[in-house]
Length: 120
Image 1 (cartoon, rainbow, N blue to C red):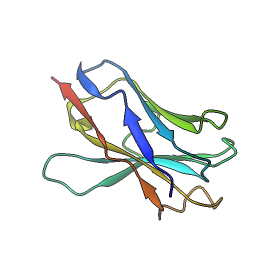
Image 2: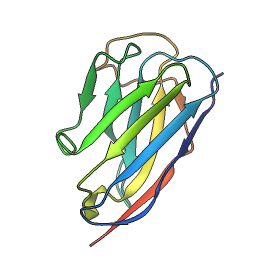
Image 3: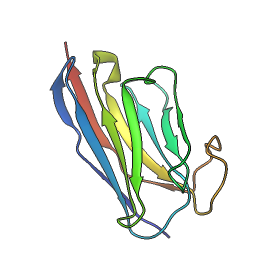
Image 4: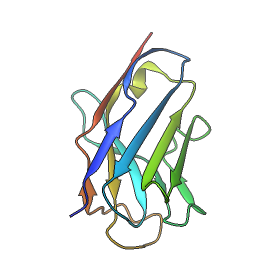
């Protein structure tokens, strides 16, 4: 069982930036970020292939968010720029146990989440 621990959340003004990190306790396959806004269902944000060579984004964050990973540190990052109040949510990190296509959003491991609040 791999444990995922997110960090980097906080309060930021609209237009600002935050970088989230997710450290895995061991090697994983693809990794991704999801978020759950207040009173809404959890939604996909971004995913990255194990190799780092392929990424996949939700339309709502394209051009503003960038996912990256450092396999030497078993860590995935989410750089969030031009933040909007509608980006306010609990952000969750997820990982595959094995290597799959980057658009496979059925993950095996989940973190506990980190709160991101964007004020207007």
